[in-house]
Image 1 (cartoon, rainbow, N blue to C red):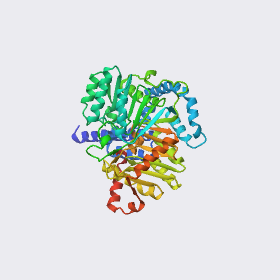
Image 2: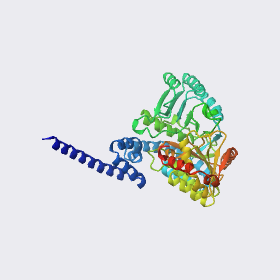
Image 3: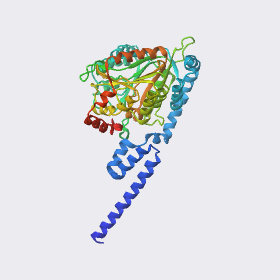
Image 4: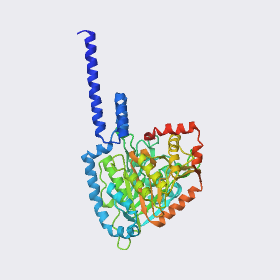
Length: 487
């Protein structure tokens, strides 16, 4: 066999391998039933770049919704959640019905129904609920609460820095460990990659359980962005504030940090304890689904008077439940929907709902950071969405006093939601997020007062401003928008 024949054989093998690869790519991508534009984009990329394409697909493109749907372990976890939470929901049915009375014949029930159907999360009452518009107020409450813990402390944060704030927390946790309190800490692996772990390791050495979440390489693109603290099973914190001194004073990068967090007590805490417990089970294999980690039944006459409902999602959620709850709320708003998000890179569905609702004459206000935004590219991409939204009648306010990191929405002075979900594609579709909806007019009005106070520290972006941008400005924004899925 001469060299020419060997070359022909090698070329034939390569050709057959390529054809087989192309056929395999088509079968896999088409079979995932994604939006046509997404499927076509991945088909083109994988066909043109066989090796590089596979690497990118492995890290960024796999359809985790479909993977989880076909995973028996996932269904076992779903069933575990349903069975464990069922008695908690059942024993609170009467109180939920009482508190839901003012909303029963209104459109607001649509939010609750969508969350229940997509997330299996029923409304639950809480006894107290406090809203903190900055990190200082949050930690002024959280630190004493940690110091007063009697049985368990569970903490999950996207970011856990090592600085003067973390030292205060660490010192308190060491003292609680000596007192026999169980301490469990979880934070996102990539989110904390750059921060020292000396204090966390010292806590682990002292008896705390500490785990990093989402460590496997194949899921490096999908983060756990939730922030949760559960103390003694019936005191909870959630919102946008991470662990770090900059979340109190802005740190070296910002003149101030504006964020929103909540503290609440009662039955509704079961929802974030459930979310912590299921991630703990997935990461460590250890179960926290025991009554002692969840709120005990309220004594007669001591039921909570505030109705809440927590919705959570991740890349594995086929419904994108947090996103859909926002869409239901905005689409049904009768008077106004006021929204805060540090990032605004919406997907087509959410953007259309915002535009359509504004076209219908509803006051849709979006507040996001201005010149203090910490990343240029997402800010430029956000600006590419301004024009049509403003043409439809929406309003845009850019916060000027520092970095606005709040993730909130208030609708018609009747309901509000505070949590961890930004209005960008990564949060809307990829990250593990949560939003806690509160069906309470007094708290909704309180939060609207906070929003109005923030608005006084904003500049309003008008259609005239946008139309005055240069061609280079518009092109830069459009180019940044192309990277929306990665921002």
